[in-house]
Picture 1 (tube, rainbow, N blue to C red):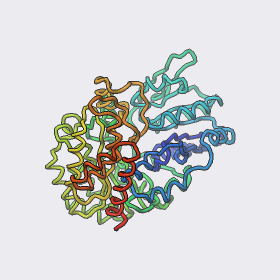
Picture 2: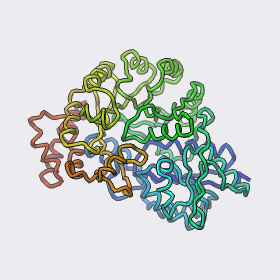
Picture 3: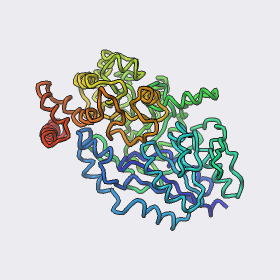
Length: 499
């Protein structure tokens, strides 16, 4: 029965956000293992008439122009909605599974309005479905939600549908009935990560292209643990910990070393990955002996890899060992350079002095790395952003500064604080982290935040004597544009072209 049952995975995504989604590869592996026919409709390579987040990062000097040269050619020449309609008519799926992040909700709703006309059972899942299920299922386009982890619910739902069985009692599934009432099934136990692998065969080959460090790679993601021990108020990872505790569970789980090894072999042997993108929230947030065991195991592969972590997790000997087995580059978040604000408002309990100490260790290790900053937080001021700029100016050795505008994702502590302060419409839809600020703070306006977003790297790069002129580039007018481009040319020559 399962061989004749067709499932279409739908991945609404911001244009050219290139990291291949692990959820889709997980679901593909699970469903194909059961014998289902699985296809994918991915919106990543469809433009929307506006600069996507990665393109803005190129424009605002946070990524090299190799992105424009290599990846913009990947944009589809056809129109997203017509292609989706064609896919539905030609593939004739028996089940639709949508997985997306909050930034892509508008695109998802656009596609749902098309697919709902076909009367196909359709489930919507992802972090947003877990963070705000009551809000999300209130949309008329949405009739079923997968709340919590999706591995087992997608398998069980597909099996029951293919066998003509009732699925109204499936754990993790919310169902909106014809009369508007909602079945809210309980959450099932958390999955064992060792029981799953990935299948990226449904993706177009071009989706493995990943610009990083000024080069083009064939990159794929890998998850070595799920969850995060940190308590950042702007991030929705702590939400999973809070929800798990309500059920007397521990959300943070690490895959066994044997499981990680099998997955590495899968990605390298079957997909010829030459860069691995470790998507853990904080890769080094684990006991030292586990990191040592990973290093010992990874000597077998030695494929370059990237990870994100906190600077305070780094020691000189650890970075040396990781580099010896393939550490290609890393990203480190400082978010804000105002020490009091970072500790009290953001949940990052470390001083600037200690941050600079660890960044000096990172610099002396010689690894390639980037710094992540966020501006426009609730309660932040323009002066606090310049505290961040001055802190970054003291850090040596990084090759890129990524600046994001604070995005109030559902499920985060700071979002609720912004609503309580009257600075955020509770119904507002997020877009992405380089879009205009959504907050309406009288002391720090969206226009001011947007202006600092595009000039942040210039303030970091140039001496404070140039700051009065750079300040003019914050303004979205002809003089500001001219100054921005003039300084940007110098920045590129200094930072990238000279090397």
